[in-house]
Every structure is written in C-alpha cells, then in structure tokens.
Image (cartoon, rainbow, N blue to C red; front, side, top):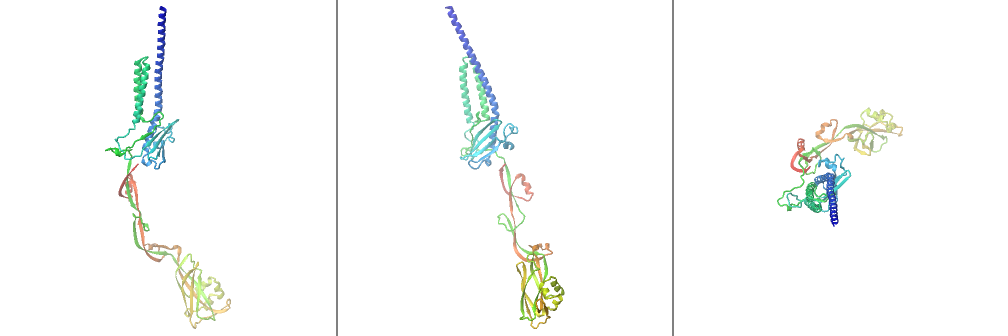
Length: 476
C-alpha cells in the first residue's frame, strides 16, 4: 500500500513536471513570438514609413500645384505633372537624390475632371522596385471658409485608433488568459508595454499619414465647405501668391490713312500734291511730196512717231513748224529714210523743191497714242497761186514739190515720276511738276495698351508710356 501511495506521488510529480515544462515551452514561444513579431513589424514600418511619407508629401504638393487655373476644364480631360517638375518648381524638397532613389518621370500626379464637376487626383510614386499610388478627390471649390462645422478628415483615423484599441484589448485578454496559467505579473507588464507602444505607433502614423494603410491606397476627400453653413466664418483656401499689374498706354507714331478704331487719334488736312518727273525733248521730222498736176488744195497726212517709245516716255506737250535750217534736212537724210532717198537725191535738192510756209497752213488735232507708238494727223491747205520749184523723181516718174514738218516733242520719263507734297518740292530740283491735286490727307495714331508688372512699371513710364489708372492682381 505504501508502494502504491509512493507510485501515485511519483506519477503526480511527473505529470506536474511535464505540465510545467509544457507551460514553460508555451511561455517561451509566446515571448519569442511577441518579440520577433514586434521586431518584424518595426523593420517593416521603418522600410515603409519613408515611402509612405514621401507619397503623402508628393500628394500634398500635387494638391497645392493643381490650382484652379491648372485644373482641366472639360469632363474627362486630364492634366498631368511629374515629380521632377514639382521638384524643379521648389514645391517640395528633393527626396529622390536627383532621381537615383525615385523616378522623376514615372512618378506623377494627374487630375481628371469628373461628371460631378469635381476632380479625381491620382498620385503615383515609383521608387526602385516599390510603386504605389493614392486616389484623391478634390471637390469643386465654392465659397470656402475656415473654422466651420464639417466632417474632419481625421475621423477615419479615429476609427483606426478605436479599431487598434479594440484589437489591443482583445490581444490583452487572450494573452492574460494564457499567461495567467504561468505568470500573471509578467504578462500584465508585457501587455501594458505593448499597448503603450502600439498606441504610440498608431498615433504617430495617424498624425503623419491619415487614411493610408499598409497597401498605401485609400480614397481621400478634401472637404470644401459651403459658405451658407459657415455663419461668421472667414473665407479660406490655398494661399496663392499674387502680383500687381498696371495698365499702361502709349500712342504710336503718325501712320498714313484714317482709322476707325475708337481709341485712335485721326488728323485730316488739305494737302497739295504734284507728280514730279524728269523730262526731255526731241524732234520728229516728216515731209510730204505733192505732184505737179495737183488737184484741190486741202490734204491730210498721218505720221507714226517711231522715235518716241510710248512704253518709257509720255508726251505732255509739243510744237509744230516747217524745217528752218539745213541741219533739219541733213538730220532727215541721216536717218536713211527710204522714202526720202528715193524721192530726193540730197538735202540741197530737197530744199530747192520745198514749198515756202507762206503759201500753206498746217494744223493738227494733237498727238495720240496708238499701240506702242504715238501718232499725229496733219491737215494742210494750200493757198491759191502758190509758187514753188519742182524736181523730177525718177522713182515716182513724176515731178512735184515738198512740204516739211518738224514736231518738237516734250516728254516725261515715266520711271522717274514720283507723287509728293508741295512742301517737299525742294527734293526734286531737276524735276518738273505735273498733275496738281489738292485732297484731304488723313493720318492716325493708334493707342497701344499693355498690362505690366509692378517691377517693370518704371521702365515703361520712362519710355513714354502712361498709367491709365487700371490695376489688377494676377496669381504668380
């Protein structure tokens, strides 16, 4: 019986030892699990925290960048800006080490206008092999204000904190029930320490990056409050730097013509103009042979003036007479006119048989243009009982006499003609004046208007510009 009793005590001691060993193993496992789990979470938080914080900073800079003038106008339209542009514009510090840590081009923010007149903002950050994004809604701004009753963006954080507190409470309860079997005092201290650390970590994360979980993707709405709910609230919004602009004006130099522009100044004055041309003169020599047995006493001859080029010269006056010197006859023969050579043999022979102007009259209706040449029609009327010497023309086989015509032509050289005012006549000393005209000549000055920065105003004022009194402010 004693042996049986000893055997029972021995069995109880063995079972108690085994139970203690099992509890010790469980206790060691729980301690290791808590320590390693906490260490793994700390390392993960350290690795992810920089990325998450940079993503949040990138998002905030993108929200500041997309001011009203940079947001898309049409529904479905998207405006995009990359990380490099925001860094270059000094909207955030360069955390990418000049693009070595994070991509400056593949990291971007894009705003798309939605059907409800709001804007969906996607912010994507790519750092080496790690890439994620945030989708954010920017609501249409309408009478914004501060210190107004509205939903706080930290509400979600409070929910997360509450959730973490519930989880921590559950963990505490579970750990307490398990560890009480081994050592209530030790587990209670560990749980309190875990609760304090977890709450501190949650508060830090909530303060830094609201609404972002470990997968970094969360819909975040930036609330803009309607002024009707604000009461006496003051207006608010993203502070925008503005620069003052001044409206300045200046009149141009006088320009030709009348302007219908309402801001222009017109000036019309009676002005006398002339056509100034270089001129010249030349002689056109002609003759007519009349037979001896002439019937009647009135005749008409037409002459084409081949030595006057109508393309280059314009006849403005002329005089007509008979040959009055031997030189005229010699000049006529010098042209080797076939009609002259086969009728008369020499200038002297022609002079011998030329009718004296006393015995006839010659008239014309003027010189006119025909094709590329000028022409003249001459009417002659012989007096009764005129006296003249006759010569025999071998070519014509008849006797007759000559009447000569010398037409002195005055002409303009067309390509030298210039129309100008009488006031400028001194510029044309070797020219003659033609075609006087007096007309109202108008000139105008246009009013130029510009908006200039305040920093540029003095330079414009010193250059003849004047302030109109209008000013405006424009976002920088």
